[in-house]
Amino acid sequence: MKRRSLIRALLSIGLIIYLAVGISLAKAEWREMPMTGIAIEVEDSTQCNFVTSDSILQELGDIPGLVNKQALSAINTDSLERMLNRLSTLEESNVVRRPDGLLYIKVVPMRPIARIFANDGTSYYVNRQGKRMPAQLRYRVDVPVIVDEGYDNFDPMYLLPVVDYIENDSALKTTITAINVARNGDILVVPSITGMIVNLGDTSLIGNKFDRFNTLCRKVLPLKGWDTYDTITVKWRGQVVASHRNKSYGRTKLPAEDFYDEEDDDIENMTGDTPVKKEKPKPATSQATKPNN
Image (cartoon, rainbow, N blue to C red; front, side):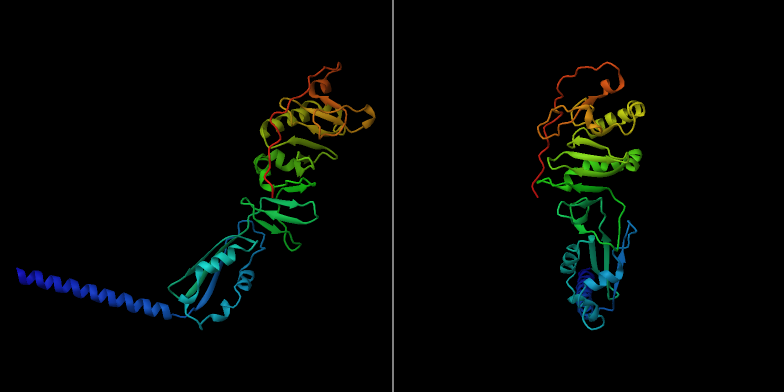
């Protein structure tokens, strides 16, 4: 019995030594395995083709020249990933050394959510994480347009609730042509109605504000005329204030110090013959504080 136990123990020790030596030899062989090639996969959901396998290959510097000349184990995949992730055109990357000697690189091109026209005349795309990619003539992405009219604390990420709401509403998506940020920070959306803007104020109560604008479009503009007003303001809770396109109607100070002096009508006055005196509108919320860039 003791002899059998001893034999089993010796066999176990032998197996362990065999495995250890085998693994060691395999590791040594793997460390010496040359890089046999580079495989690049581009997962492009936008179908814009502003990132290609060739363009990624060009970003690898001297690495393509090391094929069949340097061991695959010498390639620092972490460092290569960090380098690729710094590219403005990429959302993410993954670099793997495969057992067959291939250096496998998978990249996801940047997924823009908006195109920004900055106050300094430059233009760039931005993704949901705030990463920026300069806009170039060789490619174009069909995304919402945001225009910075000179607001000091402009931050495109602040506008995400507005962008998302418009993108998820099929009617608004085909109606709104641009989102502007005024010098005083007010968010202005530009519908396809020529010469009209809608002042949302900030990002609060977005759905309610667009509901009020839709009510105006259904009940007022067909009666008054689609070219009667140039600015529809829904920034105040429960109010729809419209500024006449024809300034000869006179001017009235609007209830916001940063606003223009223009004539206002509320939705009750627009649809009735007898003017209804309204109390001074109160802001739904104070203007949201936007982070400094």
